[in-house]
Length: 123
Image (cartoon, rainbow, N blue to C red; front, top):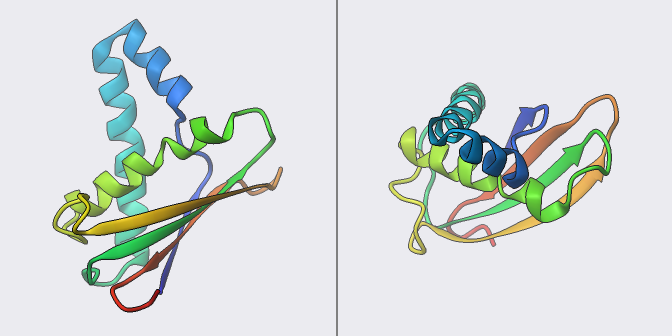
């Protein structure tokens, strides 16, 4: 089991959709910026490659209950794409990620995403 923490909040589906409507390049720029920050955190916290298939448990800790839960959880796409880009897993298809769960909490002073990755044989 591997635990990663991403400080702050990640863009949700509503923010991403608004950016794309304003300018298709803006949505991509938002995704790239978020993914770079996630990648930096993965590199600093994860040592080595993962042993797929994996399951991922997300704990989305928001500053307040302003965003819908499904809007928040959309950012899992950025996390999983970062894992692939860094070579932590070869792909984010069914053979490599066999499932994920989402839980939500509020911490006004320390919003973050806590990610627990279970490698093959740990679930």
